[in-house]
Length: 428
Figure 1 (cartoon, rainbow, N blue to C red):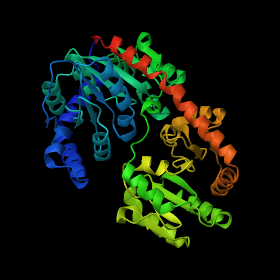
Figure 2 (figure 1 turned 120 degrees about the vertical axis):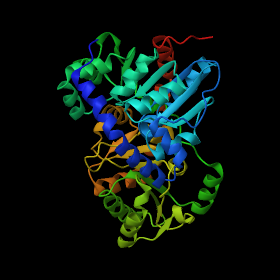
Figure 3 (figure 1 turned 90 degrees about the vertical axis):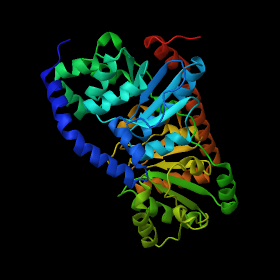
Figure 4 (figure 1 turned 60 degrees about the horizontal axis):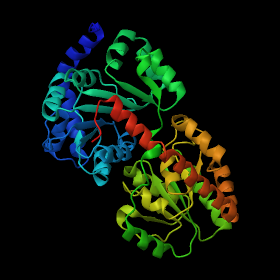
């Protein structure tokens, strides 16, 4: 296939820009506690060796959600391919920290190289992957074409692109065809996205509907000692959780909680903002609302009207304490966040209506009786009151959440087997 002019332009441009991006990325990672040595993985300098004599399967997702969504897939493929080694790459410090807490057997984490000739070549020369699986919308032209040039088989899973991104690719049909032709298999989240991928020149014979891998990630980890301490501190107090909230949403949640306290005076709200570094700002909102506050990052015990859970990697702990979770990013047009993690904990899901990123999932959860969509803070308060006043209704919702997850898990073996076949990997 002829190399498109725009691809050549991108290669030349990236060669000039890589020093600036390298400096920026290294500075950002260093500021988030990553060592200089590990930050240089962005330039393709590996910090671990390629081990084992079996095939190396490389999986790449940009950030937390994309990366964590493939951990269950790695585990299942690892059971089917006992000699295989796995490499998972991501781009952010947060994703690295959470992934390394949950690494499956025979799996290594590295930061993904920048999409420029030097970093990509160094990365591929060291790791020599036999197969590569990219997640969602990770379409980096040089990374993809360079990997294909090594002879590695390739797949795109959980494929998803925004309308804006699709429109951009439609403007560059030859480039899209050149880049997407590398994949032996493209599995999309739904039928509509399968049609969209074909519309931007993905090879139609290799595009098929898959499943949303975020439904396969498994329950979030829970520190059992911390769970025991939290339950002891709460005693018999009822508790609800508002997680992954964004600026502009916490005030509505706090207004709802104040209204709830009139009906349930000892009710505890665990508030876990999407970005824990906003802790000071959120604490000011809590005290400004006239509510007492304790804070996880200070080591405070649960005990106030609002517990500010401003740490990373502990959502599993907070979900284990309640049957009612409001999931943020949804009262404002942000797109919503992953409801699978809530359903996997067995809790009822409450959400605002702005859930474009998970529209099909929320529709199914609503149909199954596992989720409720609220209009605003007042509606949120009313729905939480109704659930606390009617334990049977709440029990039906939590049971529906568990059944929803069980139905998703049944498909994991099928997806793993399909990938193994498409990538030319061999079962023992």
